[in-house]
Image (cartoon, helix red, strand yellow):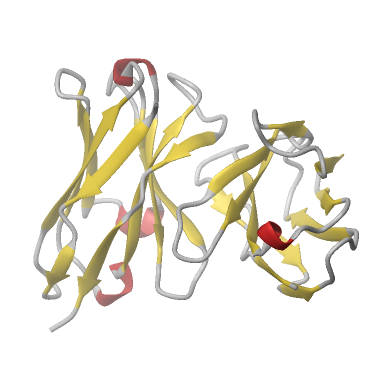
Length: 121
Length: 106
């Protein structure tokens, strides 16, 4: 069965960096676009970034452009989110999610369980 | 950015009730709209895609309709396991945005 397992969350001071990982199994990872979506405590869902199946295209939420970088290693079935210059308002549970499309956006049909990032001094 | 406005923000209903949630887009998104269910402490789950298509395994009491800017999500007969927050989401242009959510209580 499809599994997405995030890791790398934790408590970090403002201005520092963190790298999230999402290991995929149960499907051909290299055939799907992948997203990061976050959810601040008690708040709604906020899309963060997407990467095409082959890494050729990446798109970001404006508030994370220049600070976050999405990438993938198809040989290791792993999605990454490098988060630099973190701010308090980046505090959230970060979910990785699979899109049914390879290149493009259609719908997020599989989600991981999430990893919590807390930015605090 | 396209703003997605859900109504109501919260809703209390009884088992067996028909429940309707609306989602309005700030501009025409044709049929590029999905609905998700999120139970407390869990990841979101895709229920309906492209306005009205049921994801595999989703009970038929869930349905969706609409076009352009106005969309509706319906549970025909509310069940106890439907307690969750429901989100609409467009995918017309970047950034993808979600509605603020509708918390459903029994």
